[in-house]
Length: 507
Image: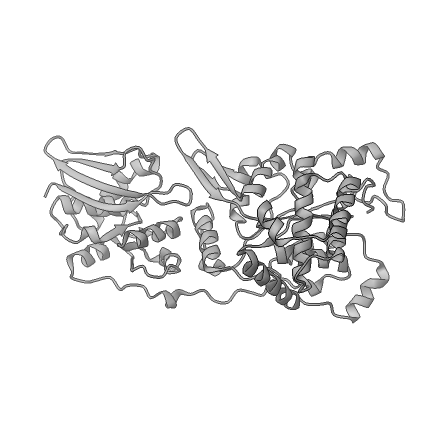
């Protein structure tokens, strides 16, 4: 036959639209044309495919070859269409049978020798292949990633010859058994017991982990802010299957790709303060996920928060509320989820030693004001907790070494119990509660309502901050096993808004 149709997948954000690879052979001057909005890497597949076919001892037809990647209005990127194009040429020229090609989807870049190379973005493609009810033929090196998806027949192949032998029935490929590729246990995460002192900050970290709340730590250098942030993942509840799949899909389509060793590990992203807006939110001529999406269902830690470009920080405002980011370019638009937990750290002043008893700080009030003004009010309003992390007295260094602190495992147990209460009550963590759900989940007595209203008036809180305090108090009550929010829970939640006070926090 002079026409063959095979199936593959495109990449569009974390979506993987179906692509039909149509190959037609006609009389005329020999040549190969690829149509259907191919970008450079796809156009170059003509040379890779020709060399791979010849080196695999197949004949490259001396005819006019037209390859259509449908739908025609969908941009096509990457070299993973190589395998489908090569098989289409072989089927259209009668060198292999085309009878069984409809049962498969093909993904893989060909080396000049005919070897099939590994590639990024396998996981979203495999998910959509399962929905389509087809079998997936892909590179052996990428098969472990696809094997995380249950209910999908995965046929790993090392070379074009192996795929052809399978299609002809002479040597079928062996389906991959998912249980054979499950990742090894991860190395233990840093333990909160390593942090000496800072009991107030540890309590705030526990509350943040229980309710998924954002947290800003303010204190001089060397007080343990970064250590505390690095230990948050060990406190968080385990990922659900759906959360793990969403997080893995984003990592899969990113430039660094996904490793099965990361499966069910909550991501922890810590971009440098010189990161650009595109690095943080994603983008490029072909939109790729940024740090906020790579931190989906995990932690985004921004150290030295005021040192970030203010315009870069402002892009966090929308995803903090919506949990997603939409990147628009001239030819396409991509949407990435970005439901991250923001943890940030900053010094109290430019030199970092405001309020130090030794008098090392020489910053003027105007310098402190300008330093704080690098963070906009709307951004700070979206951060649930602002806490001070003061220097630990030297005497306490030795005392804490003699008395081991509470471990992350113990705190995580309380966090998981509190999160379970939240899921049973509303089906979501407290930081995701809508205004109507806050009314149902956070009823207050007359005295408690008066306490919160008085604090809101004195601190000049916005309606958003008012609701965030309620959600924070609900989490504190859940940690204490309380059915209703009490005045003590409200008082503690209000105390975690130090930047809303009239006086600046001491170093």
